[in-house]
Length: 164
Image (cartoon, rainbow, N blue to C red; front, side, top):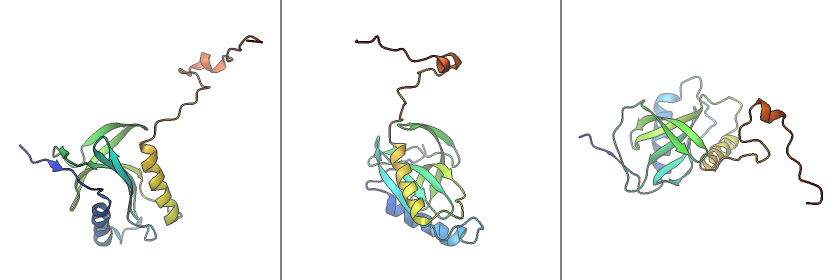
């Protein structure tokens, strides 16, 4: 039996930032899509169903990430394997990745590469808000029909009788 991936007892943000900073300095810095003005930042990590969920911002990408939480043991998976998770925001497709110092994780690329004109503070705010939104319930417009088919689209809403 393959050994499992042990969960992080505490918030993994510092470990993620250290690991991704090492990759930034050694492997990514010379690539044309590297945005030196964007920091390496783990944003909004919190526990959700006993797993750590948040966003990872680097000078080359923004990804939603999931790592095992306290007391969790994940099975070892093949790097690149795809998994879909049901989050409050909806179903999200993740890819298994691995990083020295962090072990295996799940990542869903949200933006890669980053645009040249994106400011660092804007990207940090986007990462923080995205992490928060991933755990938010979807907003439904109650004035829209449940099944917005062609007929429902052209139907007028029912009026209540006057004086009722």
